[in-house]
Image (tube, rainbow, N blue to C red; front, side, top):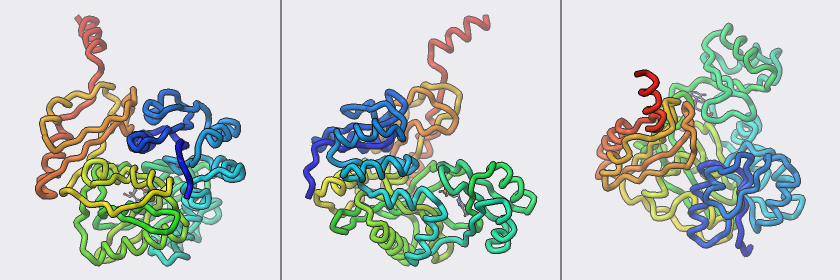
Length: 389
Ligand code: AMP
């Protein structure tokens, strides 16, 4: 059992922020490492080390100040995690989980070996492999960069050989994975938290709606059969055990009829688990803190059907209008991440609505979403009007 006073967090985004808020509530100190000053996580942490994720001196400093180090997104350089481990620091989840999940080909190969169902896939590490990959997988297909992609970035839907060749050209020499395009009924995910002793607790299965690769809505519990739920839980268990994860992790699935296919593993807290801050008695963030600090894990309990919606920037302005409207709903919780600039599709916040039924929660969440809009600050608007007149 380790004794933790300070938690180090690699990455300074909103997941780190919510993790930090929960860790602070539980009495821990938090230090984050993130290149952008005043980051969402840095705003609420005790300290932010402002440096690149691959700055060896800064990573060493994070290690020296922390009793355990975790990460809030999986694209931090593997070398930084390895460096910490070589220094004898405790990194949770371990660097091996990071190594596998940072590389879509390694990830899919691991899944195959762990006997978790995935869609057919083939590597396109160089353009000459294109023909074989298409022959193996067929069309339509989805090409994804093997490394570095998130929120639908670095992906191409390919319906013809011509589009496939264009995608390979667009990728400019980056290694790709070619996956069969799945006509799924739904996308679901499962958040689990696993302790160092292997004991694992599960959150309710969630149903996720994406818009061009970015999560927009999560519905809890997912509207799926008991058979699907069982398959999802079994795959997630194999994954957690196979990677030896200590902490919260998420597995995303496609549902087709009564079958499930693992799409992706995130060895960290996840956007589709935001609901747990307000809809379960323990959040994915608290569960993560407990797991990495060797504290007991308890089974999450859902209070009521819930719907989480992301609030994305649209480039129209940086002020969020309509907050006074949505806060009239007594069962709506609003979370904003302290980001100044609401760039197009940037995740700026989210809200969760608890309902009497799923339909009720969905209805009210949809209304709340419609009431929110981005506008330029009032002062800017006044100047624009003055300039026009
Ligand atoms: P990913 O970055 O792999 O999670 O992909 C982002 C989103 O793109 C997924 O949540 C799906 O909505 C869609 N997508 C990814 N891969 C496939 C696939 N093989 N077939 C159909 N849709 C996909």
